[in-house]
Every structure is written in structure tokens, then in C-alpha cells.
Image (cartoon, rainbow, N blue to C red; front, top):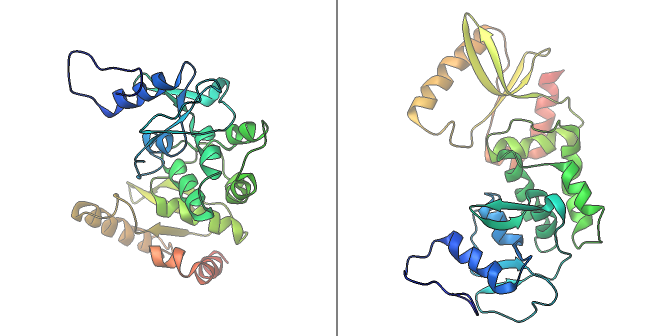
Length: 256
């Protein structure tokens, strides 16, 4: 499979088997990292052609199919295991990728980590407290808007994750996310809720709004919210990507 690592008695090799073999080929203490770890953890949809590995210094030979990453080795809780494969934790993976990604890719990584429930800013700060790393300033800028939100905040889509930092930059109040409202004996879930101001903001992205059954539920809920006196603007990708400042001004007006 790789130099010094063999598959014996069969030819069926899973992706996990190939990653495990890559860590074996690089020596004891090697772990999957960077873009490959981001893909395994669901933080990126892009599967690298080569397997990224952080290996001990003494395992320095170049091996075809493996991309050796020369960064400080992970310690303690910075190593996770998935299907018997050692890999860097989400926090350590985000720090590593910040050194090779551009600013937009780092934003996307953080957004997806929030959707997957894997964004742990305290753990990221612990990694950054260690040896100096490339991309630190870029990563800290990207994390700044997220520091207002409680750990474990419930986010279900990249659109919801994109809206939250914009609200912070605009100095707007923090909403409840994916909150439940009881109206006329029924319970409805909404993306963002400011209870005192009777404002609900819905995002049109994600797998929760793009099928006929969901569309019917959304319509029933929207009528119930309107009858109860709630403002209910809907936001699309273009509102957040192309018109963020006017969009935030409109939300601010509705909150007032």
C-alpha cells in the first residue's frame, strides 16, 4: 500500500484502511492532519488527492501518495480517533488549515465546524497558546465574531453560520438560534428569534427548506407567525454574500 506497509490476503481497501496505512508508513505517532483531517471530520467537502500526515521528525522520507506536513506534533487532546485512524482534533485541524488556506476558506471552515457542532474556540485558543503557527492572525480575525456566542450554539446550515458573524460585526443583539415558539397550541421552530422585538429571521439555504414537505410546514408556520404579530423577513445567499451591509441595516430597522 505504501513503503513497508502491505495488505495481505485481500484486495478490498477502504478509505479508512488507506489512511491507517499512511500513518503506519510514516512511523509511530503519525496522525492524519490538515485537509485530509478536515475532510474526515466533515469540515470540508474536498477530498485531497494525497493523504496529509504529521509524522515524527525521524520519519522523514518522502512516500508517494502521502503529503508530509512539517508542523509541531499534536499533543494530548489534539489527537482524535475515527474508525481506528488517528487524526488531529477539530480545533487542531482548524489551526493547521489556517496556515495553508486563504481567508475565505478559513471562514468556510469555521462556519462548517459550527454546523457540525465541532467549533470549540476555547480548544482552538489552547492550540494557539503553543508553538507559533502560520495563519494565526487570519484565524483570530475569523474567530472574533464568534466569541460572542455560547459554546454549543445550535446551527444547522452554512447560511445560518454565515449570518451570525454579520450580526456581530453590525453590533446587533444576539438572537436565539433554531428556537421553538408555541403559537395557538402548536410549537414551531424558527432559525433566528428575537423574542422581545417579535422578530424572526429565516434563511433559505440548507436541506431543511428545499423540499415540498418542508415548504408546506414553512408556509403554515409563517402564517401562524404573521397572525401573532411577528416580523418575518427571509434571507437568501445573495443577501449575505452580496449585500451584507444593507441586509444588516434592514434587520437593525426591524429590531428598532
